[in-house]
Length: 498
Length: 114
Image 1 (cartoon, one colour):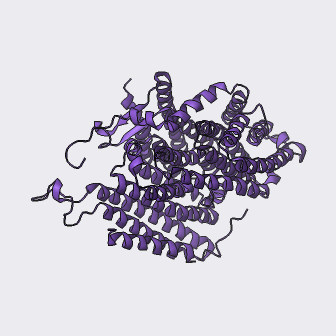
Image 2 (cartoon, one colour; image 1 turned 120 degrees about the horizontal axis):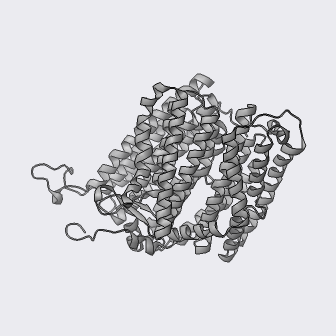
Image 3 (tube, chains in turn green, yellow; image 1 turned 180 degrees about the vertical axis):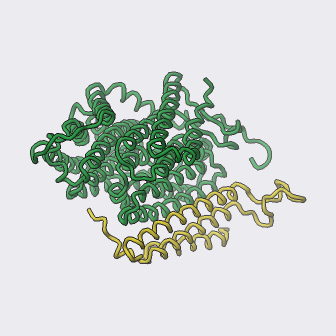
């Protein structure tokens, strides 16, 4: 099949979002079923792209309107993008099933439209090969994310959403200034060409531009000090939305940040930008873990835990070594699985029992044994216990950190991990050893999804080799910029203005 | 020489940032955001400005050699549209806030606490 069909990844959710008003008349269930259908199709396309890229070993490059880059905008589906587009689609499918089974407040058509656009934005951010196109996809993602945060229309939801919008607005302005500085000095927006020319950039301009871009993306990527919106948004947003935020919106922001960072590694002031990001990442881990410790609401607690894990990923990716990037990508995969599991499980409990404070979870082992079991697996994995998937990526990150000479960062992260163990064990204790209650029926489709995710956690934990080889290929896609430039068929620049 | 337009654009950004960080009223914060966006847009346009050339619209007497760089202008158009969407969404969130809390002062809007 022709690689250009990969543009369906962008086209399908976009066109489907426009058809939602037509289906609205058929009722709430029909609209939600439509979401399940479209996300299934998207997962199929993403699986095809994944299969093609990983068997041929070559990236798929989609050229819009057959214009060669840098004149046209290209989509670059390399090893990283193919893998994460699949994760985005699969998680969207799971949340679609979740919102079909569990209650999303009417009007469901608005929810369906927005979550299709959120999936589109994250996919685009991961796939695009043009920096301004990246900005547009980032804005699509964040505007739909603002709206989804406010979806419940309560005062709290509006408050969280407004906080997010203000920080996001500052972030996108910063990003645009950084983009202006890069465009002003290099005269191009194509990522491959930026990588080619980056060495000729004035180091000060490059440093300022890159730092502004990192600050801009740090809002989406939930890095300290621009993550104040995140716990509020997770708490106030519908459960399904929290799953999507944690599993792929954050990843898209992190990916964009790291991609741009490594593209410009020939810039002379590159290492000072790396140390900025390392400082932000370590602070994120420490601050979020201590904040998580004093939460009474489980959803908010897991939100903080998610933020701290994101800090860990950013730390690994900012080390500037091959080992760090590979370990970071591996952790991104594991984090997406574990946090999807935890947020889906907590959301399911929230829907069934009407709340997610720690009191609601007492006796969950008796009331919803299957959900409690999968939540326990997710919690143990998040702590980083051996034989669960996060153990492998965490240990690789720490080793890579020591090799790169950041022993202080590793020490702080290890200290914060102890805190993480405390609150997760408290959570497990509440589920199994306190409280009483009647058995509540658990739906078959949600049980299947939760069991599937829990099985993934354990399979990767026991046999990490396959996932690790995927992560190494994806990490190489980010780290090996020379290959990236070679893969993009840049139009030779001759004649006027070249 | 650094163009005077850059100073103008950056000072607009800083004025906007000041309003966002210091003001207590939600509407003033949103106005600050809009000012910031305008500053960024001006910066983007002025990067592509070449003294003495005209707008990049194909018409009589205007060719590739006497027009300014068209790419920043295309980018700014996109950025303006995005800015409008964000502002509209933020204002509708502010309406809900006012309905539920009866105030727009951010110091009184603090129900979400961990």
